[in-house]
Image (cartoon, rainbow, N blue to C red; front, side):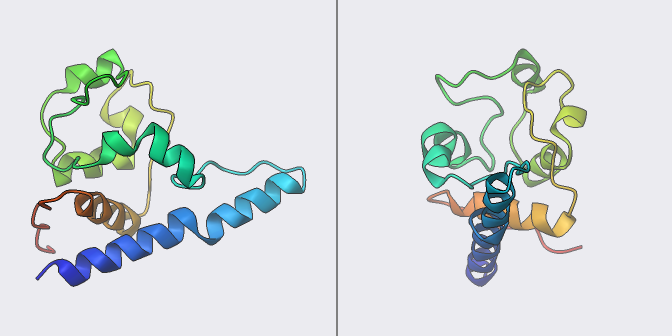
Length: 134
């Protein structure tokens, strides 16, 4: 039931995260400008630094990966990374958890957040059923 939606979300996220946007950022840097950091622009860096923190994140307790240096603010947040909690966090991490050390400014597009959350859910061996559209 959710397989097609998950696959489409994963493909859409990968196109945005690993596709043309990264090439444009690299071109701006090559031309002496400033590129914006995007999740996944350096796939190797993504794998080494955060893969274990996002794998199976949906429904996992917040700040629960052993050995990862979470901010005190995020540790104090408590709860689980539900779809709603991830949506709020991804919209504005510093607004959701004041005092977090996260420098990511958030994703303003509701569709992009939904695609990202659906993609994150695919990283689990047992994905959580997606909520029904409202």
